Image (cartoon, rainbow, N blue to C red; front, top):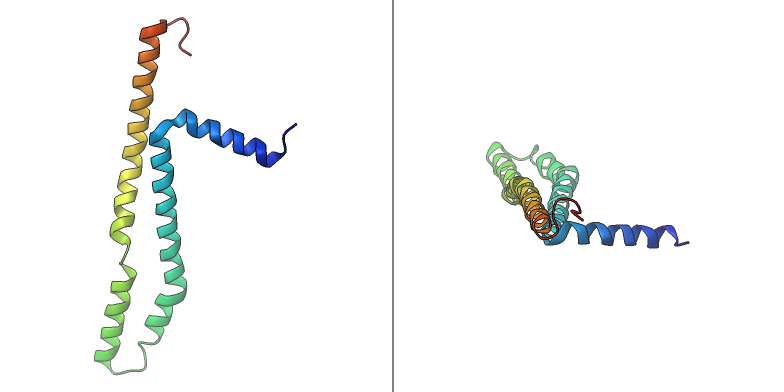
Length: 116
């Protein structure tokens, strides 16, 4: 019997082979999306509070400049995050369509009695 890690590795390999190339692209983009989201959370928890907290004592103009700089830093990767959020469901639909086309090709070759 295989150990749990080897079994999980085999299951994941079969899953990605069954999903095809679209699943690999989708998984890579999802990993990138989660990385960007976690980085933004880390920034909010650590750096953004420090930037806004340091903006209290100076005069009003310097505080406003620091807050504007903190807001610009906060929105650095939001455009990429929004794009990936819109792109991932479309890639999921593309994978579904590709899978259906492959299924219909198999049905055309073998008939409806044995689709696998």
